[in-house]
Amino acid sequence: MRVVAADIDEGLNAELHYTLASTSVPDGAFDVNRADGSVRALASVNRERYSSFSFAIYAVDHGTPSLTGSALVIVVIGDVNDEFPVFTRDVYEFIVDENQPEGTNVGSVFAVDGDVATSNGAVRYSIIDTGSGDLLPFTVEPVTGNIRTTMPLDREQRVKYSFQIAATDLGEPAQTATVDVVVRVSDENDHSPVLEFSSSSSLSSSAVANLLDVDTIIISSAVPRDFVVCRAVAHDADIGVNAHISFQLVSDSEVDDVSHLFVVDRDSGEISVASKFSSVGDGEAQEHLLTVRATDGGHSPRSVDAVLRIVINGSLPYPHVDDARLTTNSLVAGNHVTLVVVIASSSALVTVALVVAIAVVRTHGRKSRLRLRQYNVQRSLTSDNAIKSAVTSFETVPLSPTYCSSDTLHPSTLPLQRTSHDKLANGNVHVPDRTALTLSSKVMSYNE
Image (tube, rainbow, N blue to C red; front, side, top):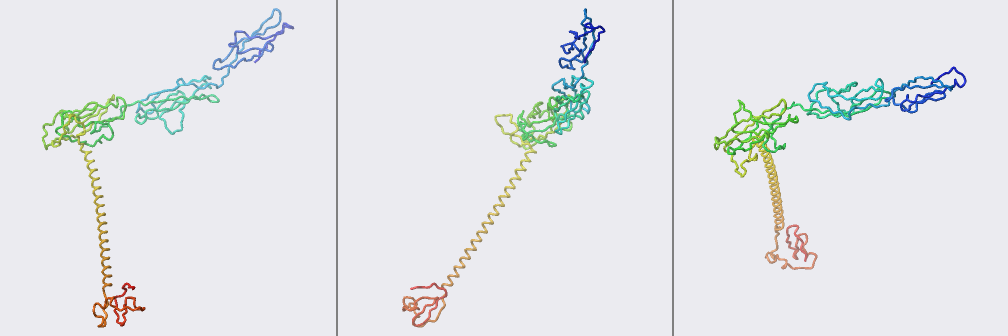
């Protein structure tokens, strides 16, 4: 920018120079050239700090006395989108009740932009999609930043939601800032307790009996007072006071009054004997139905009832030990003991069947081997008899009267001659007078 002044005088009186009013420009941001009146900025100017400047420039002639003219200069600073939106908090945390209808207000976020609000400073809000496929039950209004639910929330399914919201200005290019948002779902007493009976003082899952229509426990009539029959165990999916459970026995017109026989501890749920069962004799039995109620501590309490069947058997012995308050090791939980007995019996039957099958197979094998050995022995005896019969059977041949005596048949009495016929060959013995004595065939040869 340049300012120009004119003087109608002549000579030195018409010569001019320009000067800037010393106090009119803050921080010395501008200056003017003395000779030509051009105005220039001495430093960069922040639009977010100064929107405009106004200052006076003087034109002074060189006459005597010198005369001065002035002009007011106004400089308007144009905006550049050089500012990012800034949220008023580092993290926004909100709490919303579960089971509220769609559109329930959760809270709002707010960001400011130092640029001019009509253009670069305008901000729009949006929820950042993380790409994880997790559909958030929230929406944010682009202009106001209000966060609302898109569906009722269930604390038992999810306790906390964490996501990010972006604030983007309308400048060119657009500038964006993000902030973390945490929404916690508060509990509402929307679940009733679940009641079970345990035959153990432990809360381990293996000790908790599954609740049937009527759970049954059998005890001896000789158990002492304060004997713990079993324990009522309740679970509540809620939290805090909504999940705090208390127990009590309920009088029911359809169930006998057992308040004088049994009591239940309000906090622990232990059901114990309140008095002796002197009316139950040996060989007798009594049955009592107890209605136990579990109630949570919510503002609008929710409760559940369960019936426990207790059979007092006068025939069951009671083991007296040093500790008179015997715990549930003396109990027999009928439904569960029956299941164990059935399983054990089935296992025993299967084992016995396997043992019998193995014994039968082994016995059959031994008999088969014995018959085989007997067959082999009989066959061997038959072969030996056949051989003996063949060796001892002689073919009788008529002999000369000269050789009829028994001595003459002995080889030593036969006259020996050194001829080719002096040997036994092919079972024939040849004698000098050509009287033949024939043995049975295939007799072993005899060599002299």
